[in-house]
Amino acid sequence: MDDLDAKLRRIGQQPFRAKFRLYGRDRAIVDLRGIVTVRKHAEELIGTRLAPAEPRNDGKQTPYRGHPVFVAQHATATCCRTCLSKWHDIPAGHALTDPERTYVIDVITRWITLQYAPGAPPT
Image (cartoon, rainbow, N blue to C red):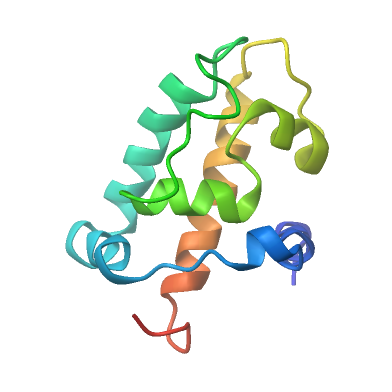
């Protein structure tokens, strides 16, 4: 297990974060589009909703459902700049750097992949 898996495990032990799973439509999006396309969606969503120094409606900008990336953001504490600071040591108040954006997208993609893997909770 690498550091990212260990971090996801720790975050997933928090009661609020532990509630999130890929079900129904969100799981179907991964099935139909594939993880490569979902990762591209994550890049776009993070770029517009999380990457700016002061995201619009920070703390309220991430819906709880409607796309697997949104579910993953809540499950991985990458939903707002406060959670990024608390759980991932990425301070608020500056635009995300390219390595920070890549890290956030990697976290989201890893969680989705783990949820979608064989043996993951069924829909």
